[in-house]
Amino acid sequence: MSKKRSVLIASLFLTALIASVFLFRHFSGHENQRFETYTKELFCQEVAGSTISLHYTLKNPKAYGIDHAPVTFGYCTTDTAAICASAENALAVLHSFDRSRLSKKNKLTYDILEDYMDSAHELAPYALYEEPLAPMTGTQAQLPVLLSEYRFYNQTDIDTYLELLTKAPEYFRSILEFERAKSESGLFMASYSADAIITECQAFIDMADENYLYSSFEERIAGADLPDETKKAYIETNSEHIKNYIFPAYAELKDGLAALRETGKNNNGLCHLPDGRKYYELTVASETGSSRSIPELQQLTQGQMFSDLTDMQKILSPTAEGASVSSDLFKTQGILLENPDPKAILTDLETKLADNFPKPPKVNTEIKYVQKSMEEYLSPAFYMIPAIDNSSDNVIYINQGHLPDDLSLFTTLAHEGYPGHLYQTTYYASRKHDLIRNLLNYGGYVEGWATYTEMMSYYYAPVSKEQATLMQKNTSIILGLYALADMGIHYEGWTLLDAVSFFRSYGITDTDTIEKIYDLIIADPANYLKYYIGYLEFLEMKKEALEAWGDDFSQKKFHKAVLDVGPAPFDIVREYGLKK
Image 1 (tube, helix red, strand yellow):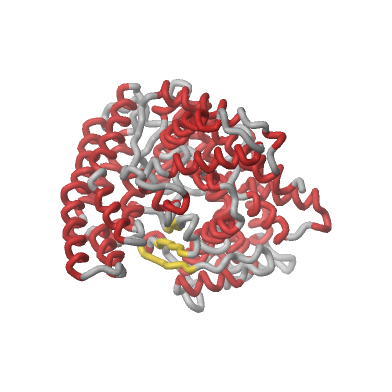
Image 2: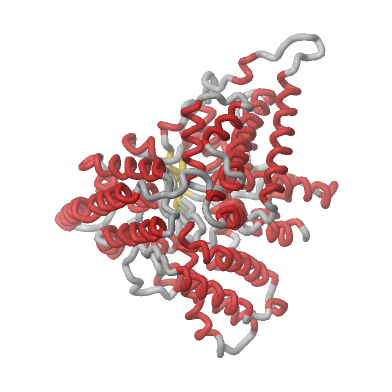
């Protein structure tokens, strides 16, 4: 599960950088050595700032010189002035290195760090515009999954986990303090977004003894090499902590949001807030990794949608003999896979990589299912990013409530597994890039790659080429509609009525569905753009590679070029990947 890049996260990251200036101002030696020591120290300081971040990033922190890290979820800060100062200091530290004397690998790290810090610096004045809570994608939705997947490599991990549960109330209070500061500044979320989060919190509490934090703990501890009595005592402690800390934290968050729900001044897009259009532009640049302006992104989206529609019309138009194409081409319900077992699908997809992708590392993948009571509140599927020193063990969650047929399962597993997130993540880990890059989130690259490969997977499915083309283009167009709606709502100020009118012009007439889409876009600006604009940037880079490489172009060569660079802004991927 990728974390959203925000100044709330970046502020901790940047604060760590301030300390670095004292560590390295008088450090002598080769510039590459200085820079690599700096990035390693920066990585260690930042990753230790949150127990969840530390445990999910490193299986064995001691091997990286990290010992006795505090047990904490981190916190939300409302000190905009401090965030701005941190951002300026961070850039000053980075710029103290002579880039021209760095190796190519270190120049790549430098350029990505500079982009990340520039983005954080520009976003810093808008700290209170950020939103840690959002239906389906916010902290309240992701935290239980992160806790349920917290691995117990040894007994110390169990003790740390149980101590971490006791920190939930103070963590949620810091989020509530942040929400109160937003409210006082006239920046609190739309009332219906608050209602959706309140409902999620209540649903989580209502699971009571059936909550998966109980069962997942018992499953994880079952494999521990401990006496039965010790395991039993741990299980009792876990149960007490869930009742005494986790459920009360969710109840307090729910009540706090209920008290604030009517204080929001804006139930529409970001551009209705003071300087909101500028903040949206910065958010889109940060979330997508694209340097294009919003009007350019709108134009790019409309061009791709026109191309997709044209391709569909060629298939659906009457043939030369006058016969019509069967409407069965649009049916997905009847498409059955020979073996719809997710493990079998993943294996099948992995075998299809050979011709077009670099060879994947050998890894183990476990398929898990979202608890039925939480299906409504979580994404259709998600891939859990493994620790960088344990990338061979991977987990994909499937939400059966959101996958209506075999083809949906197939393309979703392509997105989450091969050639999507699982493949890209484990391939990147095998390339041994600078550690600090594991903490820099480039959602446009990561989700764009997964969407790009999901689109390819339609042509791997057991359907005719015409069916594959129609369904792939149809999926692409729907994502394009969401992207245009996101930019329309947050940049141009569309109301719900404007959104209804827009979707109806494309034949989508179910008002309830449109309202749900509108609410999701309001609650999580630019989220859809990570997927769609990221996907389009990969398509654009492929066109550029075709033109530049001519007869030397191949799918495998292109994919290797962009995968070897790894998550980064697209201009940097072009510079280091395509211009070899």
